[in-house]
Amino acid sequence: MTYRQRFERRLRVCRWGLYAIVLLVTGLFILGRNLVMPDWVGTFVIFPFAVGAFLFLFVAQFRWFGCPACRANLGLYVVPAGWGLGRFRYCPHCAFDLEQEINTADLAIRRP
Image 1: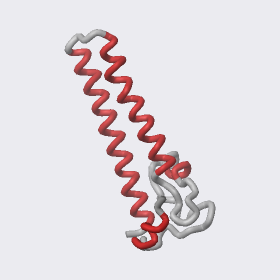
Image 2: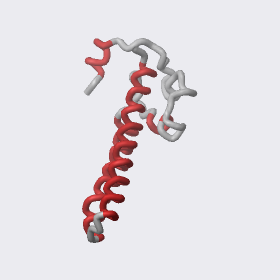
Image 3: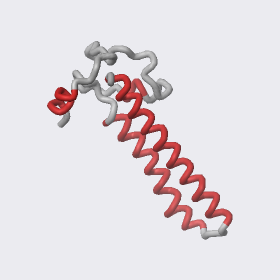
Image 4: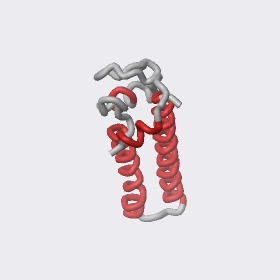
């Protein structure tokens, strides 16, 4: 597995997590409207899920997409660029090749 494949897997987790949260919030909203619930229920049920979706993406963008060599944040380049590493082969900060195979022993040492 290459570093690019690992990033793509993490991007898929972000996408599916976001889709699940959006579907859940939408379902709760529709269910709340059909059951004629008071407005305060929507505030205390739907709003936390919307905040959770934002926090999920925010944390994922800054935590999951670090360069393996220099630990620079690549999430700032990956997430706004259409959720993909299509145009990146090298880290913009240190020119680390993202097509290298992952050395599992190296991962165990570098992870804090």
